[in-house]
Image (cartoon, rainbow, N blue to C red; front, side):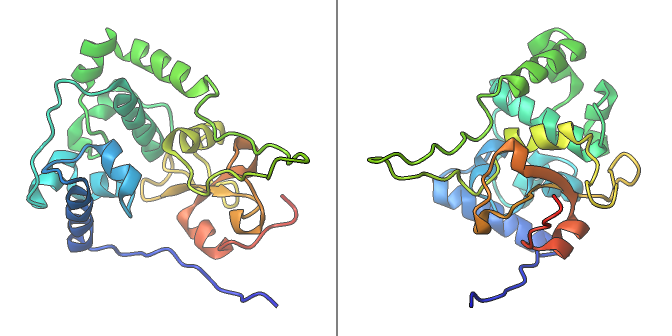
Length: 226
């Protein structure tokens, strides 16, 4: 009989833990600064957690004793990831005014997008094209042939696939109906319907939006009705 274990996500994370993780990632990369993308690839916490706690990414870096990165040549992918973070934080397609850093949601100002894309609407259209191309979804596993071994998708859900899931589900928990649009304290996750540990794949069709409370309660138990 396989061992039954309940896996709980860490709650009530302290500022010291967050800052220590920033320092750890910077040390691993041998850098004195970090972009959101660099941290997301190696960090133990989500970028939104830092933005809610410290209001600005650069402020978190400074409190960790790191330097603020050069913001003059931000890659488009990083700007799009920020839109995805804002979208899922507020629970709806964001307005330009919601990029105001005083809200503690966005790493970049509205002016950054207007300078890059010409207007906020054009930035949203570019983001939509970036997300909907399909190439950012995790690849489907190929069926094993006579001389080919099967290869599974990675367990980790990248930010673009996560954005596809949450935006598709209108940023609403598919179990309890909670949404940041109704309650700003709601924290959403993209979750495997059939757990990865039980053979489920990291593809759009096997992912759904859950709030952190429902995700913790569900653990990795598979709801056979889904």
